[in-house]
Length: 132
Image (cartoon, rainbow, N blue to C red; front, top):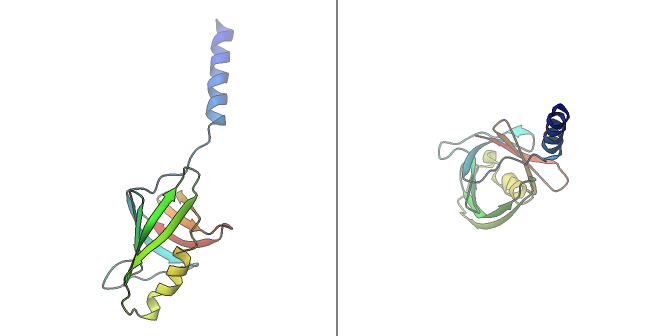
């Protein structure tokens, strides 16, 4: 009986170790964008930089225009974003909108760590960060 209990415990431990932990889901969540290409991203009086994921749709702003589109994400942190609509207001350069748009269109992976999301390109380079 003791051997059976020991074998059962070892089997459970082996199953837990072999199970791959997935990346936290970003679906149905909104994050405040805090960093772009390694530097802090300031907000504006109009809107705070943010990115929202909901039901396959993504919407983002760095404080002036809104970028929309579709996304598909998997449990391993791979994500494909297809840009759709974008408003076209004139925005001050300090909002770094062109820089953000370029980063937005390069996103290929994401990683969630303690409420902070890092968005990466296909080579694993950090594009921008956001937090809950």
